[in-house]
Image 1 (tube, rainbow, N blue to C red):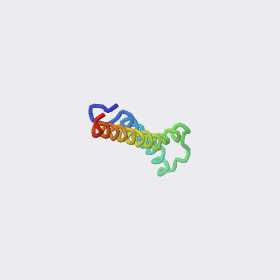
Image 2 (cartoon, rainbow, N blue to C red):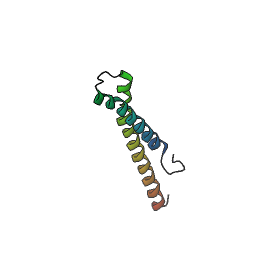
Image 3 (cartoon, rainbow, N blue to C red):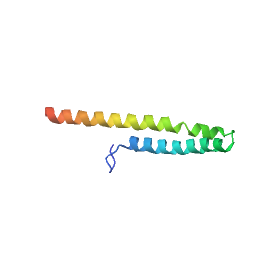
Image 4 (cartoon, helix red, strand yellow):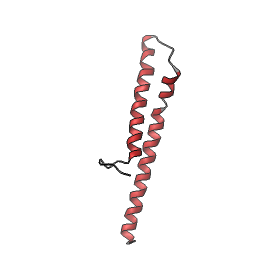
Length: 79
């Protein structure tokens, strides 16, 4: 279901998850440059939000595109 900006909620949720995951990546990687080698497991697991958010956003965009395409085909065929 599109929102006011025209993006489906799943795409917006994917963007948010991707952004939060990037913050986790920065928090996880930056201390290595200063000699800290031990990071918490929850920080490493938070980094998994990057690919998960990407998958959610792409899947939502593809589903929305297909729904728009089906609606356009119905309109053209006169159903």
